[in-house]
Amino acid sequence: MSQENLAMVLAAYQRRKNLENMVAPLVSICIHVLVALGLLLFYKPAVPQDASPVVEVKMQEEEVKEIEDEKVLEELDKLEQQADEQPVPQTDIPEVVAEQVAEISEDFGDPDLSNTNDEAMDFSDALDIKANDTPLKISALYEGRSTIGRMNALKKAGGNQKTESAVLRALRWLKKTQNENGSWTADKSYLDAITGLCLLAYLAHGETPTSEEFGVTVQKSMQYLADRVNAKALPYGTNDEKRHYPYVNGIVAYALAEAYGMTKIPFLRPPMESALQVVIDGQQTGGGYDYDYKQGPRWDLSIACWQYQAMKAGFVAGANVKDLSKGMEKGVSFIRNINFTKPHSETNPPFRYDSSLRTSKSDGMQGAAVLCLQLLGEGNCPEAKAGIDFIDKIVNNSKHSNDSRVQWRDDMWTTPGLYANPMYYWYYCTQAMFHAGQRPWKEWNEHFSQMCIAKQNPEGYWSSPGATKQHPIDKWYTTALCALSLQVYYRYLPTYKMPKQAVKVEKTTMESLDDDLGLEL
Image 1 (cartoon, helix red, strand yellow):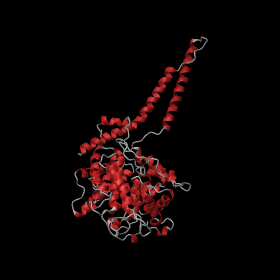
Image 2: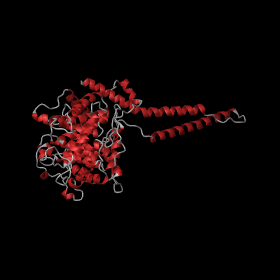
Image 3: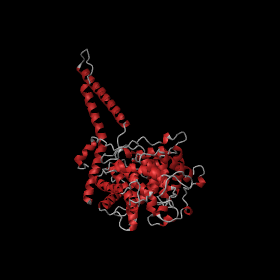
Image 4: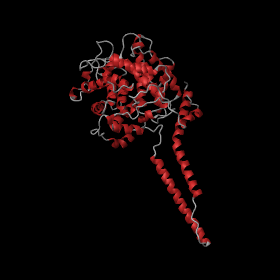
């Protein structure tokens, strides 16, 4: 898409949002005018029985006028008060900057979870999901990503001013280090995947191309990824690129699906559906995935989980991709029936990293498997509960924190390579524990969030503990994962309750204006 066409689409997008934001004030004004006219037309003052001098009649008319005006004003005040008390739907609220965060930080406090139970921490009030066909606005599925939504979610789920300030520092550092073409890092092998992760961090914060502070950053990254998919330019040529192609395509599909789901900007839909179709076509018969989307006996849970996250985001966005629902069902079957093992212990976790017995023992993949079961509608199944129990008792070791495996220490993470970055595993575990209930989430959150915030560089980025920090893309990779983990309080798409088929949402009156804007999909 040319820059001129992109500018036209985004201009129409802004006009659309402006129209939506004007609806409530216009309706309020119309109501006020109608009430005032009604009072003026139908007010009938009492007729005096005795005739009065002309001067008294004139005085009476003036008194009536004063009384009439007072009543009109009283009615208008009442209507204004009622209008103020009614919540007005917001499509994009200006984001919180550092000063605003400081001003409202006192409202956070430390959440009092002492008298709550697991049911109180069940974030299922928005879990009956529907496909998001609402054009050009953040739908109710993403309402937690507005400024007000974030503040409410932070207070409810255990976030605070420190976690939000850390996220903002990270987003500002990413903005400062973005490449001119919209990507991040200089390593061509990981350029697209890292850009997808960074875009996801902005989307989780509710940022769109019209956001005041990060709008240009988001626009450029969306355009970069869309162009890469449209040109079939995602890396899959050399042997090493073929191995990692599913990672790249899965992450890019995930980012484009969330971007389209949040904004409904038309140019995002074709590349989103193209990348998602590659995900579906590359799935094995048993529901798993392998390097280069191979269809052999080998499978790899780490690869598979990015595909499942992309599927769920695409489903929520209303992607028209053949066998998308079937692919999610196969994913659940794969995790529960092929990947899960019994019996399990401290040295033999419930879920395997891959089909090889030699490399199957991985703490981090417990969080990955559980998260994907939650995203695909099986968060309460026995297998998911076994994974949560392992993370709680073994990985986090909530009863003996000194023995916890969640520690930011170089001497604990000596293996080189991106796969050895512990933040990759903590990213999954944080999200899985968020849905696990009050006690395990509270204990995980208190441990992880404090550790993560303490390790942030003053400039806003993070470097992985251990040998992985020497990798050239580490700062961007680790920063994106840390930001996403600290956004868990409000970033979530609906999870557990998956319907058998997507139910289309009826368009509102305002949404029908898309035809006038030339943005019909």
